[in-house]
Image (cartoon, rainbow, N blue to C red; front, top):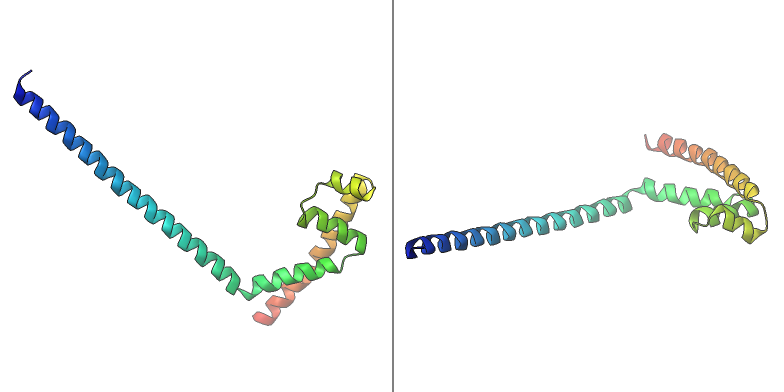
Length: 128
């Protein structure tokens, strides 16, 4: 192979490597900018959620409604939804049947749904 062809191939490979590195640098920069923008968007989202009085009032209304449940239903509901316990675990812990746990949860959800519908309708009637 002639020295001219070797030099030409060498410069082609060298330029291809430079182009590849340059492309990866630009691609990496774009990815970093995208990640930073996602973080900023996430912070703005959570900040706007903190600033929204309806969200705070809604959460407060849910906890208030949970506290109004009968004691046993409140315990079962908190274990299931706040602590994330399974129905079988709750039943074993409280020495009751799984069906009883499901009934308490069903009645609790029905009670909360009725109370929170009232809250939402009152909130919107005062704010509109």
